[in-house]
Length: 106
Length: 123
Image (cartoon, rainbow over all chains, first blue to last red; front, side):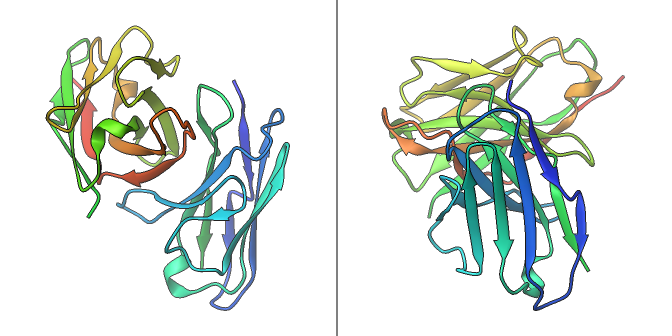
């Protein structure tokens, strides 16, 4: 199974800050990676696929990059609605696996 | 709009069974693969099981292998998860999610999610 490791587990930030979250795969997954945002008590929201392609309707302040084993999600200027937990997910092979999550908090 | 609505959750005793459903609308259900993903209280996301658009193939996580079965009724736009031999560690919110890929274009990304349904396994 491919293990997905996210860091940090949590990050404290303020509105307007640039935030970067890292996701590392235990083996190469090319660009078969997605990012999701989840707010408390809500379902996850699909943000990015193919490591860097923005899902329709997602603000352009969200950027994904990377390939192989190392990936990043960057929020260029944090907005109040961006405080949430973010998960990466590999789509290279079954079983599909998620990272442990990164909580972006004040 | 595209919508997924889960139902059928509840409290069940260890060793018991439960079937949860997911009603799909707003898209051509028969054209898309579907997933179940769960989230234990206070924990992260765990992918559980996937079914192809036509039901011809399924994949599941080792943690549920031999106990959970995914199926679908394309004539009624409904996805199912049959859960048998339930354990306390199966307690979670269960989400159904639509795969991004259409037909035989597999992506295994989950682009639309239901609100989730709670399953509690406890005596």
